[in-house]
Length: 477
Image (cartoon, rainbow, N blue to C red):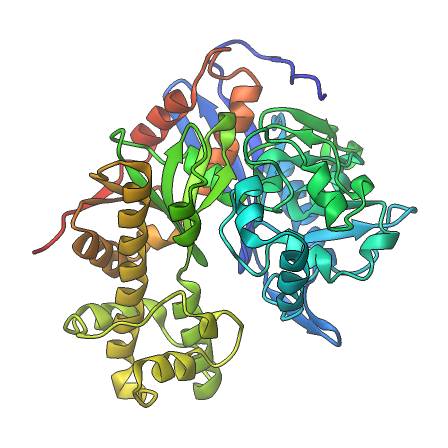
């Protein structure tokens, strides 16, 4: 068990921390400053991230990502030498395998690689999905870590497996641990105890040695080298959605949230998991949150549908498509009579997104002049999926959702926010945009003693609501 981080400054002082926030399309390093009446974020580095095609499939370029993270942290410390700690959050399920020498056996696979389809059948042949859901509480996603392990030939020679944020923390500190909120996405964590389900791992032939010790948000992982001033790395909600939910300024007890970026994570915060047959049939997941909360949610394909469409058009045109101009034009288009299922399996992999969406709609691909209307259909389809997921979450939990908090990059998309309010029939409160980084910073600051020993999650959220007042979208008829 890691020791608590010592409080080295007077109460009320402004504290500075560094937040490494990695998404599936980009990453950034932020300086967070927290004190009495102060919650500020300063971006010091932003860099691209995405899948790279190798001979054996889609991977993450982890070495290039590490270069960017190191450079970003160096710049953060140059600008703010008083930084007291570092926290890392990233996407879920993907991992790197370390051998006996501590080196990576291979580049981490990307969750959209086609290999995972084979893993589904292999796992369910041993443990039917009904039993799996009862044990781990996770919605069916064909790329969950447990399915990836089932087809990973190098697992048998690995000494440990580290999820992406834990892998980067290991490079900073030398310690190999698994932060609990992200570990909950692997499919190997017991949904009720929050501990590794060793019996499940054994049944599936997963060596227990590859599952590292679990730690909670707020615990110190270890200290960095002199290159980064020896500051501690503090575990945060290392699943980026767990950090984002920390910074959702829940305005009512029945509020729902949408953490919207590449994916839209739509759901409720609960005190206990829901693993009923109805929840399983609705494909809702129970993932770990900060302070032992449960993120009861459904993964909806988010703005990736729009970004992949724009990328395809840009490749076709030989020039970048102006996304803000496209969305302004889309807002002037009438609401479409038809939408498509944003969760359709045909939309899961990288490729020609406009052609796939057109096939679902039964229409030809749009010419340049028709792209605004097509973009409107994409945004309305995402909003429709969000609204359906909110209603289902409320039904399953016995709550009447009265407001939706939409945080993350999607909070900047006015068309999406209004369409979600219209289709859900409840107000949408948009912001903060940098919810993930804010949650990362707040958990670090609390661990450093910035808010006193008894600061609750609700105390942290009250600070978010003041620092980043949300924009309100009322539903139209």
